[in-house]
Image (tube, rainbow, N blue to C red; front, side, top):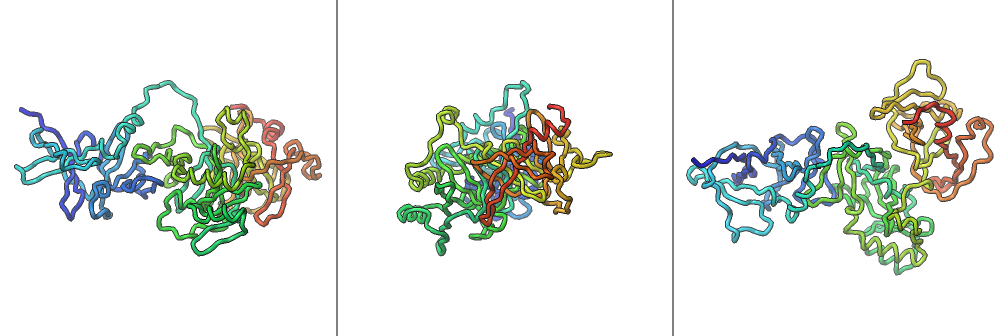
Length: 508
């Protein structure tokens, strides 16, 4: 007796009565759409986004679009068939679940190649009920055009079972269109205010003075660029996040506001400004908690980090995200900067270094007075909630926090430097997690102001009397140019001396 095969069938289109089958062993489960589907930038049009299912980010495929049906929409009762392909899981959208049935090999007939296009995903027809019912069999391996071999290689399960030291990635987190995104900190050269942009190019409006010659101005004006920014004598192109992230449904300037910032992104070959709604934090993300999303031709997102329920951060691969704009951005940068563009130092070139956020960048914050800390000492920035008070604690010792299994002391910087206590909004209070020589501390501040690039600094030789007993932690002074162009002298906290001289923390 010929052994029958099991298939799971789904209704793809109610109105057409179109029924699609999958081999039963490839279907892990069938479920309604759960939660909000997150859009993916630069993905194929048939990828609806990501659905979060029990702590897993699953790419959601619109099969109606993939098969070229006239109607692409699904109603609220749509179902998702979760399938496994090359050790990865994907969700296929259907109108409804139908049944699981058995069919003999004789009932499964391959499609005639002459009747198929090159990127077809229907491999066979299954004849049922003595030919009265025909079901199309989906070939999962052909779901993503031209990606089969790449998917197979990417999806191979890891064979190295040796325990490795846990690694962390630092990301600058920004918001756009209700979604959080992460830019690797090594790409974020600095962050500046939207008002720093010299000129914006719009169909009906041009703002600001001409930053360079009329010929270069004309190139910028007629290119796929949204503006220009004069950065320490160099003019760099500026793009809106909408242009790179496909912000559908957002008005031309709807996302611009007082919190709008420009992230200066630096690559080995050029720099550009990225206009975002708000820079919210610097996150230290465990690499092993990043959910993979790749495998269907979208390489601009390297993964998803689920920080908490309902708050997912989409981690961007900047090289891939700007791939289509790279030639234009590079050319405009060279033309507008002329021959004086500084070349990388030999040491940087030998290491393949980018313009990293280094000791020349600072995290500026407020504790009643504007102060700063070197960004190289900052691991992440988190909300203040979760601080545990200690019995008998007084002065600047605010308590402790449990930072992913590490007990970290909290220092109230306002109290540490003797500034009067004030009731600052709770939603603005932050903990700046700093680390020096294997010791970690959480610095409690009233508000994060910005990330600021300043090449020059002075030694803080003259300290006010009220700060004299903390002068060992204030050995550097920078000039911070505020949003209204006023200069402010800002003291920089020496995290190493603060931990070594004022806290009794064991190395971890």
